[in-house]
Structures are given as structure tokens and as C-alpha cells.
Length: 134
Image 1: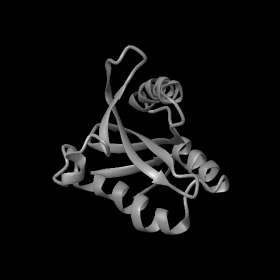
Image 2: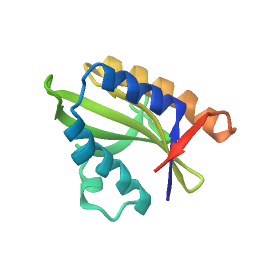
Image 3: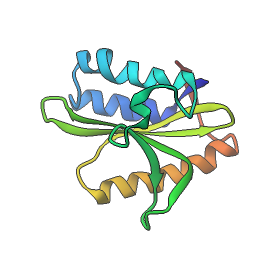
Image 4: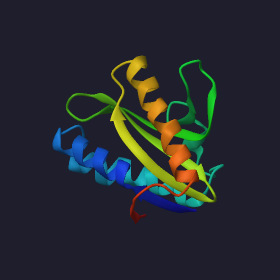
């Protein structure tokens, strides 16, 4: 499966990097290799994708599953030991990386999922900026 880096993902990565949310080692040894597992498709053959603490469906404010929306999750990342999330859209045989963020509360998580709903709409109509692929 192709992994598409959107402008939203690149911008959020740069913001998180600038804020020292994660270390270079965490990115190189954990985050990037985990994201690259998406190349093998969804449903994934990798065991960690069966773990709801690592991978799960995106849900809206009412708890309803957002079609095509998913979240990758890392716990205790960086010196702040934060919960890092990556919103992913799986659509048309591709994985689109949409935005990374730090989950500081359920409200922040739901706000990011509201953004994801809009991004799913934009991706489905071809209105996104391609910044690369993995």
C-alpha cells in the first residue's frame, strides 16, 4: 500500500519536531518504522495493529466510527512522556498521513477527529497537497 504524506502531516510533524515532542531516536527507531508498516496494507499482518492501544478507528464526538479514519498511538513519547497520535486515512488502496498531535485530553482528541472528517472529504475529492510518500 502506498503511504502518502500530505501537507497537513508534514506541517504537524515540523511543529511537533520544533516543540521537541519526540527525540530523533524515537522518530528513527519507533515512529517511522511503525508508520512504514502501513505499506503491508490494512488489515495489517503485523500483530501490533491488533492492539487497540496502538491502532484503532477514529471516532467522532458521539463515539461513532469515522469511515476511512484511523489513529496510530504511541505512549510515553519524548521527555514530556506524552501520548502522540497520528491520524491516518485509508482510502483507494492508499494510506494518507493527515496530522500528528499530542493527546492531552479527550477534547483535544475529538477536535482532531473533527479535522480528520474534513480531511477525509478533501482527500476523497482530490483536494489535498501531496508532499511525498514512504
